[in-house]
Length: 100
Image 1 (cartoon, helix red, strand yellow):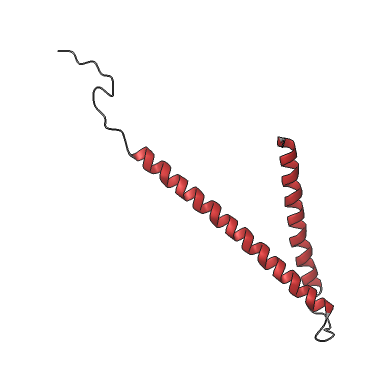
Image 2 (tube, one colour):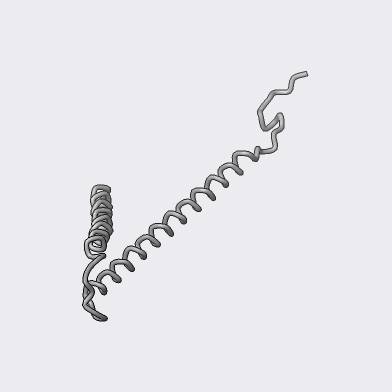
């Protein structure tokens, strides 16, 4: 895929993701204090679904962030380890000419 297409697709996914979170939160806020009609209340069922959706999205985002941080930390530790270990340094490895 082309770079422009990837960028456009990323923006679309981010926009949809943000709209789902915003609309779910708005619905929960507006209907939090509704008059419940009983056991099969459609508003209560929707509130439960939206609460579950928000919880799952939050868990997915948290998992992604944790995975990214762990990858970054491991990569940083590997780089520090490689940089701190110098090769066995000798005059020959430094290409110093030995003159008497």
